[in-house]
Image (tube, rainbow, N blue to C red; front, side):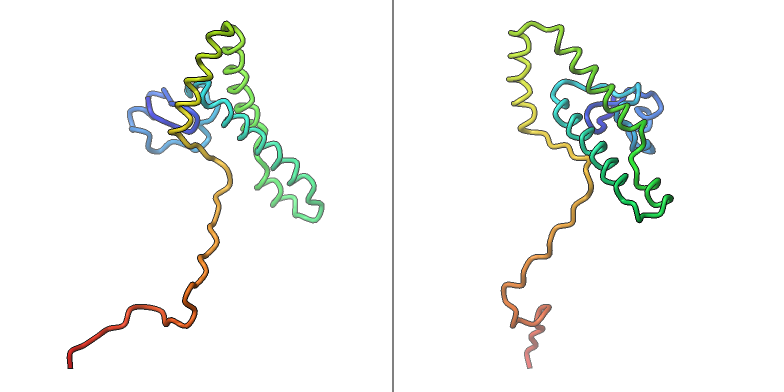
Length: 143
């Protein structure tokens, strides 16, 4: 198994390649194995896909080719939706006590893991705290 976003992948050629040369669209593929601890992330990712789709649909002035390039694929949201549904169905068959124990374990696991497949963010440049200072180090010579 190889770690991928929201779980692990069991696809033989991907595992043999130690996780290299795999397309990004692993989420929801038949080889991806996930667990209930990823459910909030899967649901948030699905909401982002759907929100982006709606947002792009409102751009009346955008060229059609630009909208189609930026539009999340229906297959992506359908795969994520099916994956999240499988996890929820697995939870439904458990007893209340088992679900409670799982929720406690999830809290522990999620404290140590971060997953984000959202849009990359660019940090704002830091303010120059000493605006009068010249850039770069000063070379000192003995002379």
